[in-house]
Image (cartoon, rainbow, N blue to C red):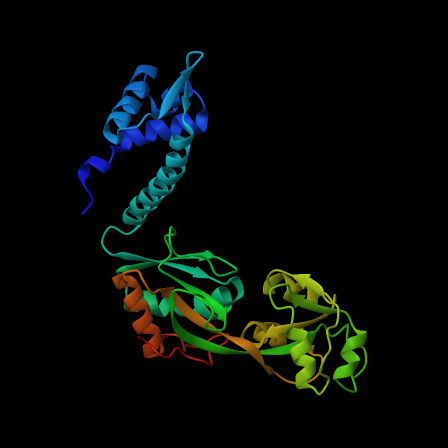
Length: 308
């Protein structure tokens, strides 16, 4: 338990944070609906509690010391966490909230169609989704868990495999004007790929007996924009089968050559190994492990396994 002497009041911290951000006591006072004198008193109280000077006076202005600026940077993070916690409680006062970081395409096409089933079975849990494209440090964030694509290479987390991935080479019908005779024909066509998966085309060609290929390709940061580029005839795209099902069924995309091949990675639910697990995450993992992730819809194949 932290000694209470090291837990300053929110009013004092807010005064110091506003002074650092706005630059003057008058501006801080206006934002906080206080007088300048009240702002000064709050900072004096904080200095007394911490036993260290936080401001100096320069030409009638209060200027934070370098140590105080470093302190405010940490205080601002803590105040953001407190604010997020309060918003979470207001959004769901009777239950818990699961904060989940997702990958855009997987979240939209695989996870979202299944979440109604989780909500029906766990009405006490509110699920908040936010997009992150790459692994991050869970410390200092509000996320309980994240969706990860690749291998088990995210440090400091537990893993639960959700689905293997297969990719297929697809193009708009207007781009494939004549039947191709082999995979090598694709080298003469414009290719599209994700900037985070630069080796995908090399692996695809390797699976079709053309090893060592590193063809140039137009780069995209998300599957959604790459799929649309393919639909509009800009090139051949390697797309996950769960994502491409709708465009294939509608005839907007057709296989360029060959069928699905195994991708280099898989999809995982990951969560911090050193943080106490909250009840909403436990409910979500158990739901996935019991088959909650194998409902109807795009990418229905591939359920979750290995709950720990």
